[in-house]
Image (cartoon, rainbow, N blue to C red; front, side):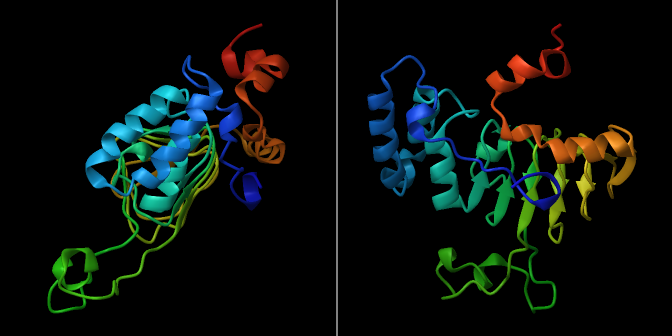
Length: 230
């Protein structure tokens, strides 16, 4: 799916992922090994580094996407890169489209501490800390669209459900509400200050759903629009 109706498919088969100069067979072998080994926490940083090196970095690595979906609850589209690949910078129940860019200081929070209880402390709602059996504070699922840019120190707060295709979240913005397609938002609380294109152009871009294509296809068909080449 794409544009107005959802998120473009994010995962590229490992057989076609870039392999950083090693044989595709060896890259696939490492990927198949890394995903189950990732449950061993002391190995996680090393496994992420190896997977990125062998599979063409964050832009291409199917293994990174597999471990973030399986262990961190974050689904990340192809060619997206940046802080979304830092564990715990993006809360679980987040889906991110293709070609999106995250500053490594950006954060996404999909739930609040429970203000209505006697205590807001995580000991009372996080089973991982050993004092409760179930997690009783719900997450708000978030969809971040395709070609979204989230800048330095930007924060997406709980209760935001959608950041639409082409949106730009400025550095330091604190987002409390959904963001429309191709909107540029700034400040705290974040507000729309302009749109990247006029409404007819935005509608055409959403209909085109160019993010479903590879960079090679886009270079071949629209070199000026994407690469500034004639």
